Length: 189
Image (tube, rainbow, N blue to C red; front, side):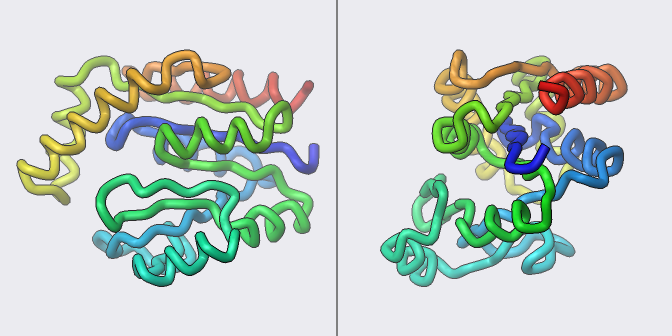
């Protein structure tokens, strides 16, 4: 089972972090890959737990030194990426890597890891539901939500056909059950 990778991607607000958290609770052999980002922490986020928080200048230095498996400049000066050192750390512990990344990052990771990875695209049941979920978070301005919704539509258009599986997150318990079945099948391969 070592050197396997499970990638969950979704537009912001579609529920990938909720699904990943559920699966991590069921599988002690799974380890969450902490991504790096140049954005500021939100709420109670802690460096090294939800993300490695790195300023944009340092992020660019790490890009130049080939320290990332993949990275994306999602918005101007807002980078997200996967450090090679994070992959090595998890595999050296004998764990399965679980990624919770944006859609472009997920497609890049699938390309990088190939058949060692299963990639799952989590989709909202509709754009209206996605908007309500983003508003319910209470973390973004109306302008930021509009930007996220525009980005979500372009991400969904980009993602079609680039992931091994798609999962519509409508009823959470059903979504959990379907994700568990996908993971169990992949691990048995």
